[in-house]
Length: 293
Image (cartoon, rainbow, N blue to C red; front, top):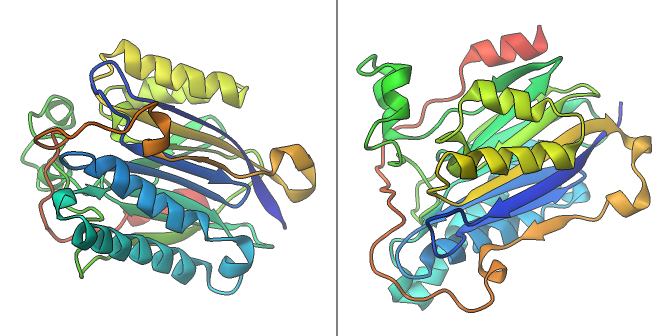
């Protein structure tokens, strides 16, 4: 069964940040959100560099080994960050998260990849399921039973990620494959949405029939909750391949540095996020049981 994606993207710098460090890419076979971090102009550069590599991941390149192709593209983006830092040492410390969904060609399968705390959700039959696991300090504390879910929402270190694309030699993205169905709806988002808006509210917004209206509502919810970070979303519907009109098939890319009228000013400090290198944990098997059962 040949399935494809119809999509809407939105990205807003929020009400506090001076610059939008998020970058987004969407095509009929691939969805990506990258949330940059780093001092000076680093966050914008990191997310844009990685998105550029992901945009090269065309359908033919992913047809034979889609999971491996997705992994290689992420690792290539990570190496590109290292090269950029060597060329411009003032960018040292920059990095980005990434979350991505790749539809396999001529298949009813999709691959999810994740590094960091940007998220991928799936809505099926009105039920919202978080597919990814945050690589974050708060998630580790939750897993260890040291804090509750309610405490996690207000934890002062909730922006600390334990893994990101920072140009390091050792990077292991979380990847897994699941089955999809026509009518499924994906939400990919930066933490500027998921840190501020409860999943119950995400589910209501994502249930709005029109993708544009749903995406607009999600951004509105984040801004209404304070908008203290950049917020980016991709809302995408799974449809039969022959349901696509030609005008709908063009990829859409939103690179962070291109979203400002002028170059990003140099500024001290980082985006309020710290990267800790800890072991990653794969997505719980219960998600696969729910979707494949």
